[in-house]
Each structure stands twice: as C-alpha cells, then as structure tokens.
Length: 156
Image (tube, rainbow, N blue to C red; front, top):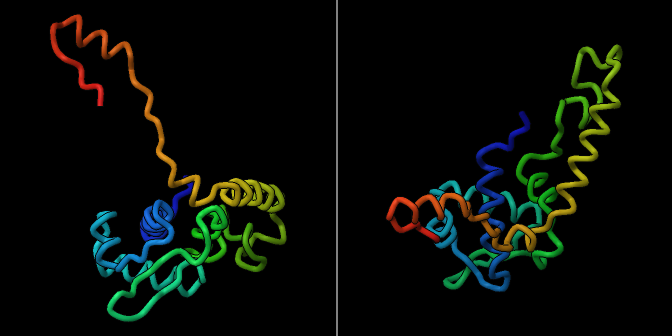
C-alpha cells in the first residue's frame, strides 16, 4: 500500500487550511488548534514547509505563516516533495543505485512509469482544489428506512 508519513499527512491538512484563507497570517498555535495537530508538530511542519519556500514566515508580534504563493500555484506533489523529499513507489523509481537487484531487475522501468503517473496526478491537484468542500452523497434508502420505522433521519 502506498502511504504518506503522518507528518506529511498533517502537512497537507495544514496547507489546505491555509489555502482556505490564503492572505491570512496564522501562528503555529492557531493552525494547531484549527487542525487538531499538536503545537510542536505543527511548528516542525511549518518550518519544513517554509524552508522549502511553500510558506512565508513572518517574525514579530503579529508574525506567523502564510502561503508563499496563491493556492492555485501549489500542487500536492510540491507539498509531498517538501515534506518527504523525492517520493517514489519503490526505491529504484526515485534514484539509481539504491537497490542491489537494480542491474538485473526486469520491472524497474515499469515502476518508474508508475511513479511518473502518480507524480503527474499529484501535480494536477492544487491546494485550491483540496480546499474545496466535498459533497457527501446522501443514502436516500437509509432516509426512507428511518421514516418507515417512525424515526427521524439525520440529514446533516
């Protein structure tokens, strides 16, 4: 299974929160409270993203963090790359010389192709896309079943 690290996952949550109000300056404590991430973890993530030029860090009494560019110009691939470094499905799909089987491997090129497709998909999704609300489908059958049994269905 492909899986991002917990820090990267939290980084995407924080960046998406920032994308919802891109001109606002947030402190680490503000972002921690809004996203449910601990303050030390949020601080670590924010520093990493600022070092990679995805966030701008402002010092002073009214300081904090804000997006370095508009959310439409920051892709999920850039956020993941900033948090994890070059991401790959397998070690050999990122860089040569990391696998002892590399010289004899008949599928390395296939893994590299898969890696490119995943990276292109992540490059096509921006923070602006991530910040959009997602409509959850309503199970009409469950609503009708609830009414049939005389109970009120929760529509929220």
